[in-house]
Image 1 (spheres, rainbow, N blue to C red):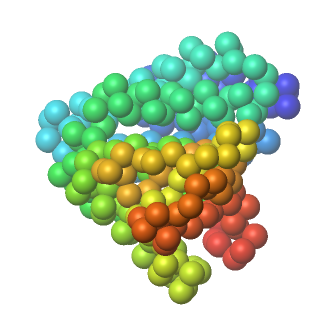
Image 2 (image 1 turned 120 degrees about the vertical axis):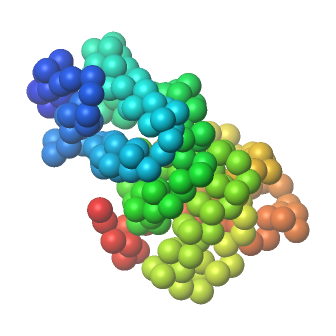
Image 3 (image 1 turned 180 degrees about the horizontal axis):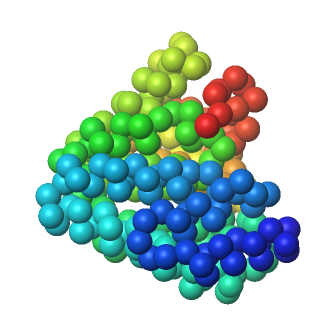
Length: 224
């Protein structure tokens, strides 16, 4: 692990601020973080369809992540789990800071090949991106939630038809309780661990809730 992380750090040092080279440093190694490079390529490829402000938001968000990865990588614990949590935290920070919602709001169709149910497994950067999109407002959140549920039905059939408007994943070491998400968020995922079962009685709005687990690929879901 130490050797792999040293290789990643060397790659980060030699990568530039522009483009997706920085994110490629996390591909094809034992500390791989699937999705970072693909997300970057997709955002850049579609940036031409946004207005000048939208293009600026996308480029600034990606540059924020590239710089952050290089600056913070050497400061985190030399464990893959710590590196991954740093990456996910940086995603949330950069997407929000550079208002990616504003860039995507009128061009959600450009996100179609990223809003894919099977990309949620194993949990990682795609989940962080979906959580971000779900908070971009009612229209965007509804679009993302309906798209993911529809694709889930293709894999799991009738099981997914009972999915309600709320899916909350929490960390393995989180307390056993249910957190009510904001009303504009039809789904919510986290990058670690399975759903905790609610300890309170389910209300009318909860009776169609569902659970997803990180090893759902064992149930026949396609991998990336």
